[in-house]
Image 1: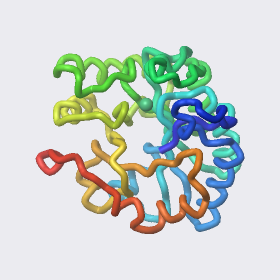
Image 2: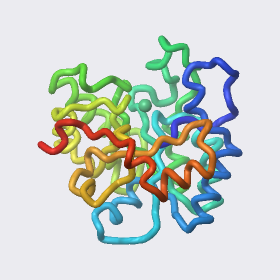
Image 3: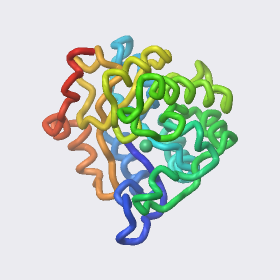
Image 4: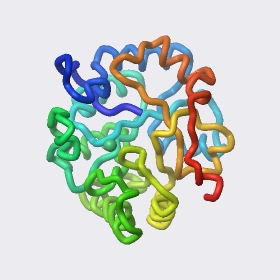
Length: 246
Ligand SMILES: [Zn+2]
C-alpha cells in the first residue's frame, strides 16, 4: 500500500510519512525483483488470489490517484516490468486531495482522465476509491451504495480499461458489513482495507476485505523484505471484528 511517490515534503508537514521518494521507490522495486517477487496490479494478482495461478508475486497499490504516481512511480514500474493498481477518487479526478485539507496535508494534483488513460495504456490499472473519499461508515446504505457503485460507473465513463473498473479500496480503511455488501452488489472483484498483514489462504475466501502492508517514507528495503517475506506484518494484524460473518 503506497500513497504518494515524490520528493520528501519539508519536516513537520502533516502525513509526510505517506510520501515515498522516487529513489526509495526504485530501490524497493529492485529489492522485490532481487528476491524473485513480481509486482502486480490487483487485476493481475486476482488469478493468484483465486489459486488459478501460483508463484512469487506481490500486489502493488496506490491510494487516491496522485499525479505523482504517473510521473514518479510509472517509470520505475515499467523498468521492472511490474504492474500496479491506482485507486482514484471519481469526483476528484483532475483536482486535488481536498479531503485531507483540514489536517494541513499539502494539496497536490490528482490525475486527470487523460493521465489515468496514460497510466492504463502503460499496462497499469485504475481502481475505485469512492466518489468523494468519504468515510463509508458515516453513511447510510443508500449513501454507501452511491459512493461505491456510482464511482465505478463514473470512472468507466472517464477511462477505457480492459474489463472496466473491477477493484475497490475503502477510504481510511473504514468499512462495515454494509460497505462490503455494496462492493459486492456493484460487481467489484476485490477490495482492499488497511488491515495489516499478508493475504493468507483464509483471505482467499474474503476478496472484498483484503489486508495490506503499508510502505511509508521510512520503510527501508530490509524492512520491506521483512514485511513481505516473513510473518512480521501478520503478527500485527487486527481483523475486522465482524469479518467472520461475511
Ligand atoms: Zn485514500
